Length: 221
Image 1 (cartoon, rainbow, N blue to C red):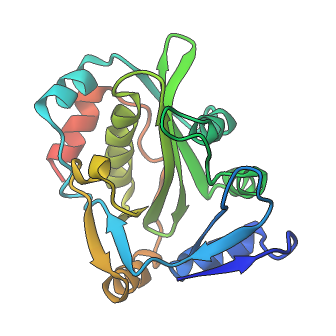
Image 2: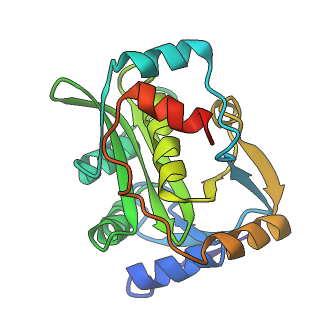
């Protein structure tokens, strides 16, 4: 289900958080389209925090610390990376209004980024919204093989350590399914969401950790 919103003054960061609490999120048709529309999928994608699948090859990459992983140090660069065209995808749903709204959420502590670096180069990352004990993954990107996957592994470790109970991926792709993503119907999702937004989790509880430590946290969940 979706509905179009064309008035730029209608959506504030506070309205956006209330929408997430109801299971709704905004998208744009394209980077050049100034309007947004609300989306509430009939079938929702989730990654169970106790069911993340990590291939042995990816586990070796995570453990090797081939990427330096940080949190909330380059939010605008991450959203720029997520919005940039990629091979096979010339356009994006992340328009200027989306960037401004989620940057405002970041500034009030409700939107976070995970960054993967090689030296001083940002080569991958992801960002998403936190509300209560729920985290809503928005988008991810990579310029080096496995960079976004490593960021996702570190994100899951951080969510587990911080007391989160729900990782919403909005939709399920074949890429996310390989990590254990599942689909749930709207009614079940809403029940899970209602429980997850009650109480508090701490995204910053876990300091930047090694890949081996991130894997240990996940294995013990």
